[in-house]
Image (cartoon, rainbow, N blue to C red):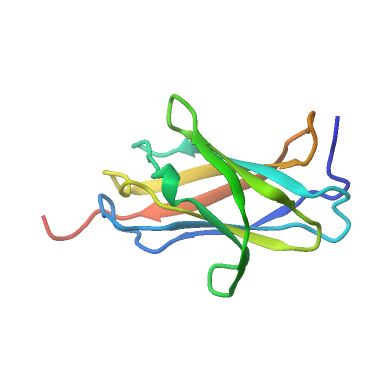
Amino acid sequence: TVYFEKPPSLVSASTTFNTAHTWGATYYFTLSLPENAGEPLQRVTITQQEGIDSVEFDLEEGRAYEGGRRNSGLRIGLGGVTQTGDKRSLDITFSPPVPPGRSVTIELKPVQNPRYGGVYLFGVTAFPAGEKSHGQFLGFGRLHFYESDWD
């Protein structure tokens, strides 16, 4: 079994639009892989743990790049973005894996923001490269959506 020597960290989670039931938003999850990680980052799982409504994503629109949301760098290749049957969990596979010492931002496009306002928690787990890799839970990305005032 392959483990990180020093696991990545979840730096931030954010969205372009935080109004409930809005179209055209983008969600960003930024991770930092330390120099002494010991292994490259192969895959990230993002699972919606809390929120009144389930968020569904447009899997074809997933992207990843070096750096943060506001200082994006080179694009990172994706081997695939898949969603589980219950649509609460996404697997993002990097191709090739992200080497230690880099920051990576995952950009996801929901079909639309949740219908109902509230706090939505997305658990983020990172997996090193390897056939039998052990995932490391990095924490929760917290997105807060607000009801619109124009009903």
